[in-house]
Length: 192
Image (tube, rainbow, N blue to C red; front, side):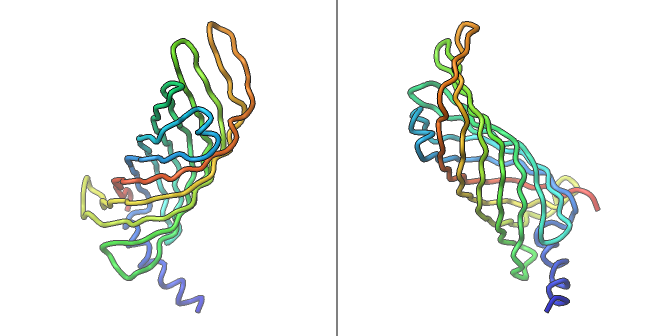
């Protein structure tokens, strides 16, 4: 049983990427839910992410930066930060597409501005989800994939800081919120 599982890994790795490293750029749609976002009337937003990924087999590891922009009655807000994301590809015996499951841990910063007042807080986020990699063939000297994915997550924010005219005031934490993120990305495999 263990030997057969090990033998499947190269086939799964081929479905994920023929190359040990990849770079990815994605467009994001983020739906925000929960008390933290309702407290500032934050609306759903759009944005982007960039990441690098190492793929030694069926399990790969990514790290990158994400950012979404949101409108609210309380001003314009950005939600941005860094993340790490392990991903496991499910072997479906296809070189054309590969479904995957993923987890993501992020350290996020929420910044808002309205008139002369700026607001900010930081938090941690955990998302789980999955997606589908679809082979697009060769591009730029490496294998190209389309990444269609979605995640659901939980964020816990710290204290909210308001700054105006050189002074700052710290308020209580915004609390927690949830998010649904839909991702459409373009992946290029690198290396040999």
